[in-house]
Image (cartoon, rainbow, N blue to C red; front, side, top):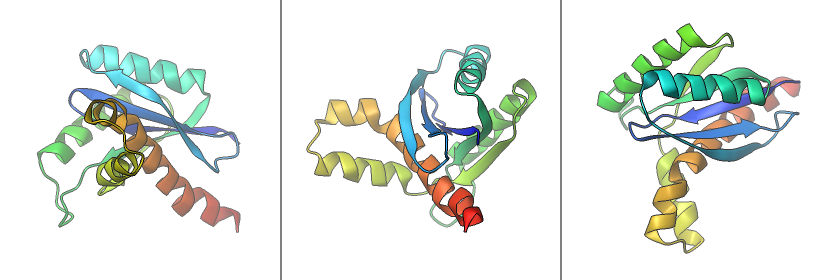
Length: 142
């Protein structure tokens, strides 16, 4: 089975996570500091190749009422550009509450505000991917 790469899109950073080879668990692997669309897309393409990713999951930051706000529109525009540059399927999934969930995990771990901010994007990407794996991949195995 091939791995799945996940992105938590942000205007300053993009959190990145990857599944294990069996697509059971998600691991946070880092963040991409945004330095322009061309650079961002190249880094994502390189990561997809490095991890032999067969699919790319990107969080869609919907409003709590399910509507698309400014952040969702920016993420959709980014994914449209990404689809032109990468030759694997790209899918967006609802990421509501993943950032709050990540923040709660850090608070429970008693991490400082600086460490929380530094690591939140990659943890959000990990949570997005784990939710996807739990809902889609594991369901299809039973």
